[in-house]
Image (cartoon, rainbow, N blue to C red; front, side):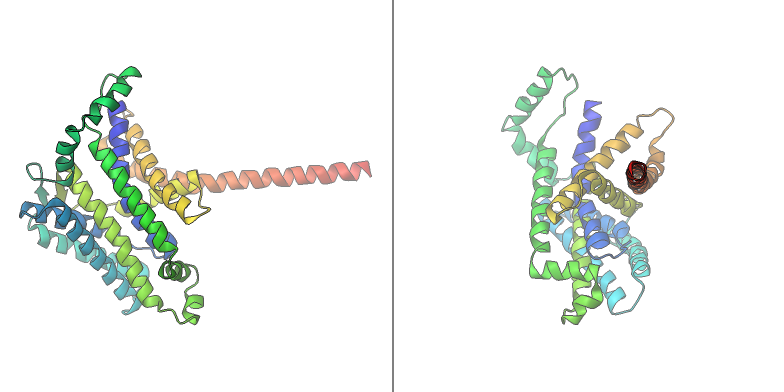
Length: 327
């Protein structure tokens, strides 16, 4: 169980980058961007094919981010310049990216098992530090028997994800970031201040899909392969992470919300791992479990709010009734 939970947290931190990208498009821009299912694979495809052709893993990951940025910008152009419905423009780009990703890889999947990646490079350096022995020693003293092979990936991904989070927080507080947030809240209002909402939407979607592609590139290197179908349902997973995070951790400030999204991605992975431990559920049920998690995350807060409101009204009626009787 410990190893399963460790792997869930590990993958949750990687997928948190994708969730941050979904948060930017759905919450900040109020744009239902389905490009995510395609740009996630684009990130993995570009990174994988670059590494196979001898490009250093870090540079290959940067290429993947750039490819995701372009994909997002094209979606924005279709919407703003082509006047295509936001939902439809995302769907069109998602469909187009399926063929583009096949072109990039030249086959349905690319293996990275014998290739250098960011993770196996950092593992070699990490092993020389001896930190794994120290951390595993702590777990052993707590009674754990099965221990993680390495903490390098988890520590590295926590650092990368937090850096991206802090950059996102800073960006959303800049003049451009505030204009981007205003575009999602009230496009007509911000346009009245001479802001170019078309450019803001294009850039915002570009940044969103750049984060999604970054996650895809890291997932490909983490899993040791990339597949043309690995992006199916990513938008639902991203939404699940955002919704769960907001429900559990709150949204009072931008910094708190982005941290909540990261927490939501980790909680989602843990819940999914625990659900798959149930005997009658299989790995193929992961998408069904995801849908159920999203439904619960959407419905539960509304039910709780309704119950609280009804209790408040009952208390108010009781107080009014008590006051009338005293009179």
